[in-house]
Image (cartoon, rainbow, N blue to C red; front, side, top):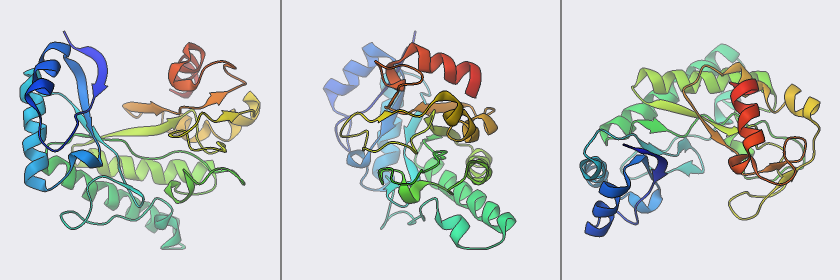
Amino acid sequence: MTNAAILGCAGTVLGADERAFFAEAQPWGFILFRRNVESPEQVLRLTSDLRDAVGRDAPILIDQEGGRVQRLGPPHWRRYPPGEAFLKATNDPLAARELARLGGRLMAHDLKAVGINIDCAPVLDVPTPGAHDIIGDRAYAQDPATVAQLGRAVAEGLLAGGVLPVVKHMPGHGRAFADSHKELPTVHADLETLDGWDFAPFKAMSDMPIGMTAHIVFTAIDRKRPATQSKKAIKLIREHLG
C-alpha cells in the first residue's frame, strides 16, 4: 500500500540507504529539486532508480515553470521565459495563449524524456501591489481572468505532452508580504475579497487534476494554521475552488 506522501532524495544518485527507506515507506511519488539534476542521462537514471525502489511506476514531480523556477536548465535544456513573458511578447491575447501552450508543450517534451510525469505548474497566483516578489514575474498577468486563460494554455500544453499539471498555490499567494520558503506570511483580506480575486483563477481551472497549497495563514479561513496544514482551508479548496 502506498502512503500519501511525496518524498525527495539527497543528490544526483540514489543511495543504498535511500533505496531501502523508499522500499519500506512506499511514498505515493517523488519530487526532484536542483540538487538532483546534473544531465539528461543522470536524471533519467535517477527517475528509473526511484521507481525501481518502490517497485512501480510512481509519479515523479518537478518545478519547471520557466524563468526563476526552472530545475532543468542550460546547458542541457532550454531556458524558458517567466510566466509574464507570454503576455508581454504580443498585444494579441490569442497569440499569447498559443505561446503559453507551446511553452507547456515543450517543457512536457523535456520532462517526459527524463522520466518526469508531473510538473508543478502553472502558477495561478494574482499579484497585488506591494506584495513580496516571490511571485512577481512568475505570474502570467495582473488580473484573474488573464491568469486563468494563460494558465490553462500552459496546462493544456503539458497535458498534450503527457505530463500532468499542478495548479499552484491554492488558494492564492499573490497577497503575501513575505517569502513563504523563509517565513510564514499572513494574509488578512476578507473572504469576499479573496473569492473575487485570488480564488478566481483556481475556480476557473477546477477541472485540473492536482493542486498545490500555499504555506500562508489566511485569517479569514483559519487564524491558527497555514493552508498547507489547515483542515478548514483544505475543505474550502476542495468544496469551493475545486
